[in-house]
Image (cartoon, rainbow, N blue to C red):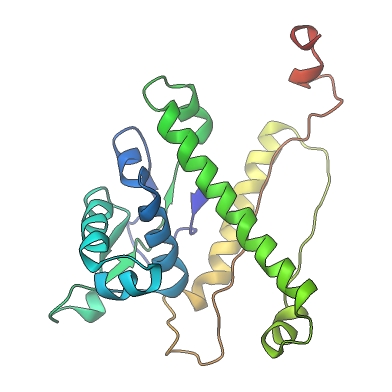
Length: 219
């Protein structure tokens, strides 16, 4: 899993590899909410995040420092020198190899919680949009976005090696297409809203010879 494709303009930067130690940076639910806010709505201060999330600025300030400690966020260089520090999501993003961390006794519990929140949040945001379309189809905001939003599923046959190569090519394409929109704020482009792109690339082993649930151990 990963958050934010690497920005090609960030020379020498790579996504943060979340491993054993860095897992602590994501261990608290409020930190995940703070990351979502910084990711979707751009740089913010502890006070601003506290107002948005219904938390005290002291609480958000503490968790911001923890996120900074583990490398998930950084100071916003365009808003330095003020009374309060502005924070931004790490431009190159982060990624974690969930399958490997789930197999480690020392990282399994933390990884399970992080993955549950991550995928649960993705599902919740998509469900929220679909409910709006269903329940408030005549709302001007919903009407404005209804035709732009889309979802699709593609089924093909690939080897693991081909799938890995396809995934790399797909991420390269996404990075290139997202480049003009990176770093935008609400003030930069009136009328623009946070847009979320979700991608999943995985083998559908159900009913195949490789299905673990259809092998001898499952009977």
